[in-house]
Amino acid sequence: DSKAAAISSPVPVAWYPTLAVFMLAIGLIVTASFFIYEATSSRRNRSLAKELTTGAIASLFLGFGSLFLLLASGVYV
Image 1 (tube, rainbow, N blue to C red):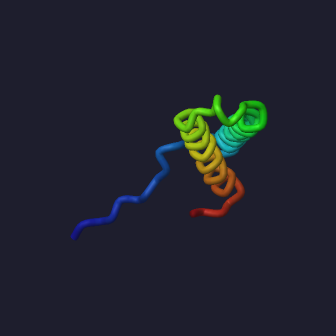
Image 2 (cartoon, rainbow, N blue to C red):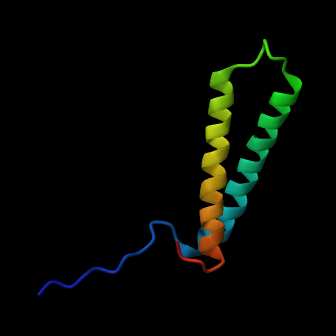
């Protein structure tokens, strides 16, 4: 007769709004720097590795920021 353990978040619920704001802010800043890089660099000077790295970092922060925003607003995903 085994009882199931309650599932709990590894991050305290009180941190959700703060994490959402900071992660979304960082993601938007990295996204802005990506667009500025694309607009100001010539085609010869662009680096595919830098573009992919910047895009991946922006995507990571915006994704987790969106997740914590949904969790902070009561939408449990």
